[in-house]
Amino acid sequence: MARTVWVDRDECISCGLCVSLLPEVFRFEGGKSEAYNPLGAPEEKLQECVDGCPVGAIHWKA
Ligand code: SF4
Image (tube, rainbow, N blue to C red; front, side, top):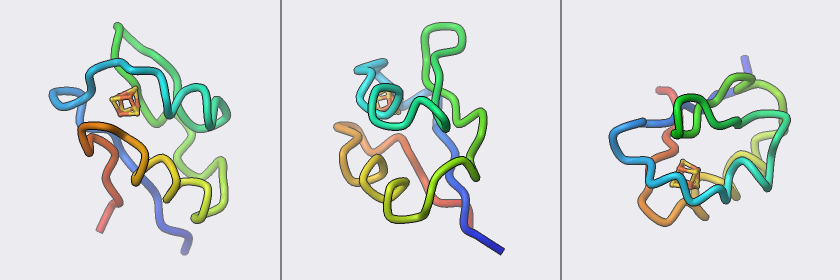
C-alpha cells in the first residue's frame, strides 16, 4: 500500500506551500492545511512537501 501523509495542525503556520504545490492533496480548512486526499500524488511529490514545509508539519504515516 502507498504511504500517506498527514498534517499536524498545531505545527502548521499556514504558509501555503503544500497547498500551492499539491492542491490535489492539501487544502486549507479552518485556516490550516489538511491532507484531504493523502493518496492523491506519488510519494516523491509528497516528499517534496514533507521536505519543503518550513516547520516540518507534514508527516508520513507509519
Ligand atoms: S507547508 Fe507546512 S506550514 Fe505551510 S501550509 Fe503546508 S503544512 Fe502548513
